[in-house]
Amino acid sequence: MKLKDLVLKTRSYRRFDESYRIEYRTLEDLVDLARLSASGANRQPLKFLLYNSPENCARVFPSVVWAAYLKEWGGPSTGERPTAYIIILGDKSIAEGFGVDHGIAAQSMMLGATEAGLGGCMIASIRREMLRNELLIPEKFEILLILALGKPIEKVIIDDIKDGDIKYWRDNEQNHHVPKRPLGDLIIKL
Image (cartoon, rainbow, N blue to C red; front, side, top):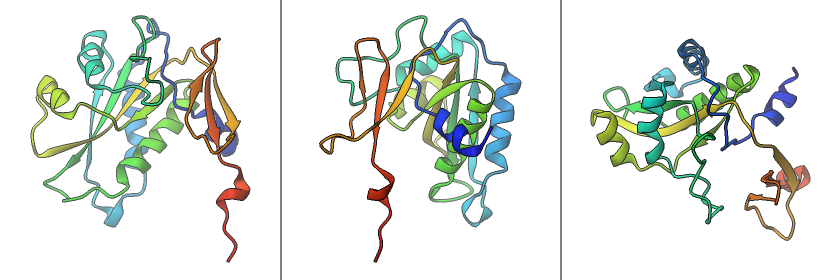
């Protein structure tokens, strides 16, 4: 698959086939992609928590804040929830700040998940203290991002922005629409 096609297929999916289990080895392979990705000053301060059992996924789920633009939607219902999570942590004993390392790592893992026939969502809206307490995450780790992963059951459609509105939305068939700015609006010629 060409890189552009892989990027186009790597969308933010929020509804999954909860009966499809993701192997722990697959999660390790995704973290290996993050390990091989760029890191500011090559500090490599990221650590990862991997969860794929129904019990552990149920522990993570309440700490995730889903789809801020969809005010009426509280997140995926039972049967449509993620079947794995990768929690990206910053090790404060290695670095004081984490720059964009976690974004680079997350995108590498999401591209790998797409290549493996999976989908997911990078989530920064996290009830961090709830998650820290539930999983007993030591204070030396900053909770940076959660990747919610699974076998997608929803269709994500890329639309052109209309009237400057960037908010994603769902249609009557529960297709998820994501407005994107035109390429010509992004490139500045001075």
